[in-house]
Length: 140
Image (cartoon, rainbow, N blue to C red):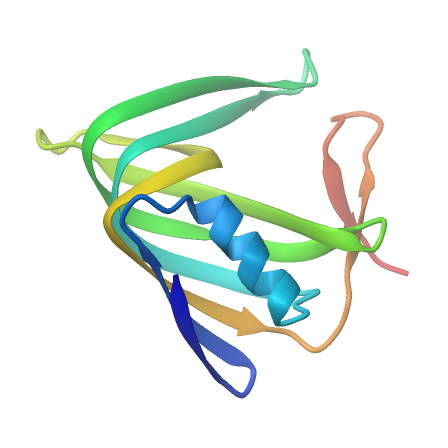
């Protein structure tokens, strides 16, 4: 991974064989990012998505292997109990043009991944929502 910061924006490149969630956390901790929006594109050969079931209060995970173009990675960084908390979604297409997407659990990069991170001056904590079981934004 390599990146360059321009004020409140970061342009990052995640390289072949690197995992998106791991590298994003590394970058966020290094740059002390508490709140940001993220978007990006790239290519992956191994990614796992989740679809959340409110009734089960759990994610059903599905893994994909092969050649996929990342059409978009989009999401946010916030905090939960003061700690780094990412929330990312991915959509990726296979060689037939089929598109798959969901909550990004993991993605190993096969070629490159280009991310733009817009840092927001502030902190928004998350808290568990008892009905859904997910960690939602909490505004004081």
